[in-house]
Image (cartoon, rainbow, N blue to C red):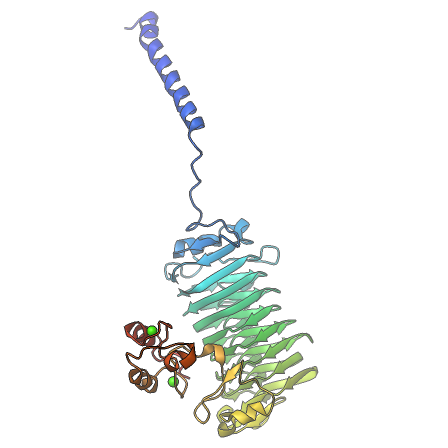
Length: 423
Ligand SMILES: [Ca+2]
Ligand SMILES: [Ca+2]
C-alpha cells in the first residue's frame, strides 16, 4: 500500500509536466495564425462577387437546412442528380413569405436532375418553395412532384415579385391541388426566356408553365407540356389576374384538357393581357372552352394572338384569331400583326410554327427546326473550311466555336446538340 507521501512524490512532477503541456498548448494555439473555418458548401462567401459554390447533391440539399443563407448568392459548378433524395428527403429552399429565398441562385447553365418530391405540405412546393429573389440559367431534368397542396411548380411553388430568367423544366410530372405549373405554381414576379415540357395536372389554375399569373410579367417563354385540370386550365398558364399581368411573345403546344375555362394558351384572361402569343395544342373541355383561351373578362384582353383551328380541334375562342395550320406556318400571318421577326421570333416557313430566336441551338443551321441530318449535310459540306470569321458568319455558322476553322471541336458540339430543337 502506497503512503500519501509516496503518492505526492510520484504525482507531483507529473502534474507539473501536465500543467506545462497545457500552458504550451494554449500558448501555441494563441500564437498560431487563425485557421480558416471549414469552407461552407464548395467554397465562396455567399456574396455577389464570391457566391457560395454548389458542386454536389449534399451541398444543394444543405441549403434548404440553412435558413440564414436564403438571402445569399449561390452558383452551381456541376450538374447535380437528386436521385438520392426522394419523397420528403429533399430540403426545400424558401418555405413561406417570411422565410423566402430572397438571394440569387445562378444555375450557371448546369442541370439539376431527378428532383422527386412527395409532399403533404399545404402550400409552396418545388425545388424552391417560396422565392422573392432571383433564379437564372438553370435546367431541371425530369422533376417529379406529387403534392396535395396549392402553389406547386417544379422550380418554384410561389414566385413573389422575384425574377426567373433562362430556366427550364424538361420532362416535368407535376401534380397538385390549385395553382399548379410546370415551372412555377403562382407568379407575381417576372419570368423571361423559360420553358417546360412534360405534363401538369391538378384542380384549379393549372398551366403548362405557370398555374396562376397575377401582377406578373411572362415574356419570350413557352410550354410543350400537356395539361389537365378542372377549372382555369391552359397550355401556358391557367389564369391571368390583375390588370398589370402580361403574357407576351409566348406560345404553347401541349394538349389541354379541362372542365371550365379551358384554352390552348391560357384558360382564362380575367384581367391583364395576352400579347403576341399563339397556341396549337389540342383543346378539350366542357364549358367556356376556346382554341386560344376559354374566357376573357372586361378587364382582360388578347391582342395580336393566334391559334391553330385544325390542330386544336377548336373553331372558336374567347380571344385571339383562328388560323389554318398553313397560315400558322406563314410569316406574314404574324408580321402583319407586328410580331418582331428580327429580334424575337424566327420561323421555318411551311414546315414549322414560329419559335423564339433564343431557343435555336447553335448547330441548327438549316430549316426545318431541330438539329438533324439536313444540318449534318450542311456541316459536312463545310468540313475543314478555314478563314471563318464574323465577315462570313463563321462559315455560315458551322465554325460553331468561332475558332476560324471547321474541325473536330465543332463536330463535338454538333453531336452534343443532335436532335435538339426538333418540335
Ligand atoms: Ca435544322
Ligand atoms: Ca471551329
